[in-house]
Length: 423
Ligand code: GLY
Image (cartoon, rainbow, N blue to C red; front, top):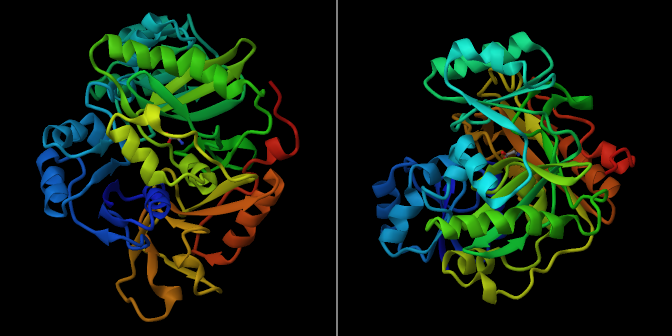
């Protein structure tokens, strides 16, 4: 198959790697990816269709949320090109928090109580009915910066007012306690097929301290999740939402990421995303044994129900993010990435490239070919028979990589390894 992957980060590198064996193209990609790269604006509908036609793609896989919310999947479908990714209307489950709440209310899915606020003068009054902890969400896409969870009412008010001043409503929510679960489900109309459950560690520093980030590391599966945990999420959350989308005449096709908190009553929805999660995908796909291309193609062509059950490798996988100095506020860019093992940076089973560019002073020396170009620079992947083995594998690898000023969390999955998470 000839497959075009849209996107440029570590998640897309994991997808490209899992699709190897096919002719894989990526747009725009990054120089660490073993695929033919093409320049394109990812949310330009006609440019993506033109590229897919030019290379005669059998399948287009859309990685990030922006092109989905911009309707790129619709344009590809209208052009008769199989695409993995939901329509613009269905992607509103991620694109509008208020829309997602309406769908959940109709579908009877457990989630936090919430209030939509558009008047800045009402923020303080309404917050009295919530926290602490206060949860304040931008209704729209905000590139991972839309949600503030804080026990400081001034911080909550300031974030809410800033979002409203930018022209978006805010959603105030009750705080959902309990360990978080990311469950990715393939959805094709009413057919739902879950992948392995994962958890990401979102705070920048060890012990869950520091600012929220897009994710500093992740692991899969979850040794602490009840045996029926995945099935409960499918039955209580994802299937009702999939049915509701069909009922509305806007069926979902693609990956639905349910972000949940596992509380006293079981799973409650924190958020939906209309795409694979980053960096959880880097861990989950490391364990997938079924060819990913078959899975994505079946979803894209409406034949997911006919796909044999997914096969998974035994054991665990973990990913640790190497972040640039200053991440998440103002990451420094342009630093050289070097390693004592010249093969390491070109081994996608261990190192996935995210915020990486080719060095302007590129030489034949593998150690000097890449420079940092974003906040989350590399995702190092480890696997093992136990979760402790998987994290140790990832840390052995990351210790071999040098990036001036960079940092990484030393405790990815530690609470799970130490048995400190219970439900
Ligand atoms: N890991 C969080 C996200 O992908 O949104």
